[in-house]
Structure formats: structure tokens, C-alpha cells
Amino acid sequence: MNQNYNQNQRGGNQRGGNQRGQRQQNYVPAIKEFEEKVVQVNRVSKKTKGGNKMGFSVLVVVGDKKGRVGVGLGKANDVASSIRKAVNYAKKHLITVPITAGTIPSDIYIKRGAAKILLKPAPEGSGVIAGGAVRVVVEAAGIRNISSKVLGTKNKASNVYATLEALNNIIVQNG
Image 1 (spheres, rainbow, N blue to C red):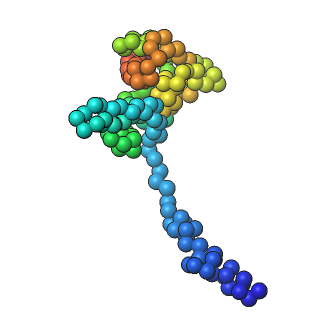
Image 2: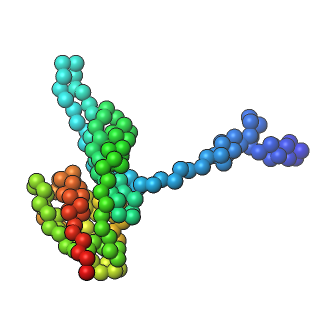
Image 3: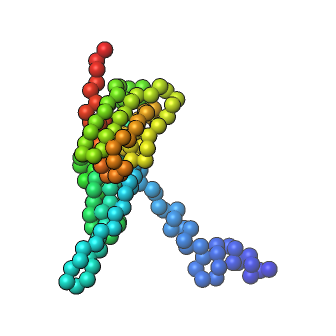
């Protein structure tokens, strides 16, 4: 009984106590300014004399949910480095999206390459009605109510870039 009392008093087992818990108490999570969302990870390989050279290509969308959004494509030998490169690029190339009452001010149709994107403002409470690639960009920008349709290609990268161009080309009407 006396041995159990000593064991509990030290905090853990007989080999040094509960050190893991003590280390985690000092950890303070950093507050992120931007939300990062990985849209696509491609594994690419190249035939060389010494065999196959493997690499990764990552498409990342970065946004602050307050009207700023950016897209980055990072390429490296491992996924973590690719994501880091993509995030850095996206943060350097942010666009500002005009948001009025949680939606976009006017509807817009854009064709970029094979991608055709239609974005329409939606009434409060309808939410984000959008497919995968468009949804990621729109949510990162902070748009809460929007209706959209992807009409062209199913290529995620093309649709992300087309959505970004559409949001960048929205004309704000003063009235």
C-alpha cells in the first residue's frame, strides 16, 4: 500500500514519471492566418538511365475566409515539400474576392481552357452548392451562399484555376 502511494505521488510508473504529459503542457498551438486545403496530389515519374525518378505535384488552395484566396502548385520529391512549396506560392499570389451579404455580387460565366464555370449568387441560408474543386476555392474565400455549375472538364486543377479567375473577374456594381 505504501508503495502505491509513492508511485501515484511521483506521477506515473517507476521509470521517470509522466514526462510526456508535462512536455505537452508547454506546447502552444500557432494561430494560422490562412486555411490550407490540398485539392490534388499527383505522383509523377520519369524514366532515366538509372531507373524511374519519382516526384509529387500538389495543388493547394489557401484562404482566410474573409475574401482572400490563392492557389499554388508545388512540385518536389516528397509530398510534404510539395505542399510547403504550393502553400508559399499561394500565399504570395492571393486575390481579393468581393463578398456582399455572404455571397458574390453578380453571376459570372467563365471559360478557361477546357473548364467552364458558372457562379451565381444565392440567398441567405442556401449554403454552398458547388462541386468539389469549386467548393474548395469558394469556401476558402469565405463565401457562405453560392450556386455553381462545372460545365466543362472534370480536371480538378483546371476547374480550380477557372474558379479563381472567375472570382477575380467579378465586377462590383455600385448602386
